[in-house]
Length: 212
Image (cartoon, rainbow, N blue to C red; front, side):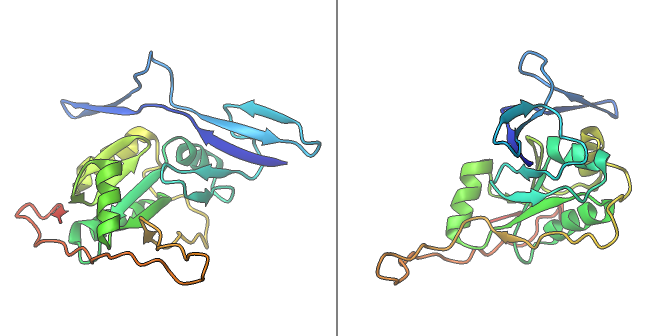
């Protein structure tokens, strides 16, 4: 049986007040959910809003990257499917390293996208409307810069376990560029595309983000 989840438009809004972090969902109060397309052995297609128990599944993230979730504990898998985490980073970025370290220490599966070229920079601007790094996405919630307390609060509200429950031997996927290299033309010669490395400016005084 082939199980293919399809992300539908949803919203996840986090409100902080007097030290309380409350997850709210707009859009007429409907919950954030994932729709799964199930293709049976006979080719029959059905749809469900629940991940089939005991069935391998793949989660399609906001960036289009498919990540394997079948090896994760059930409760963690449910959170990952509802609120996938994407981290945008660049080389030589201290706050980016801190954000990555926090996610790994807490055992949060995530997709990391590197900003290395002007094409990556333009795509980040298009997707996130910012030039500040790191940028985090927890579901549809954007988190700019790095503050351990803020990141922990958003992860708590999304329902991620406070400590790692990843299975032994779990290996996170390597970081990959946000944009793909130029595609070769019919003659087999690569199309030229001028790109320039993005060099982050010195860390600001707050030491929690970089801008380029």
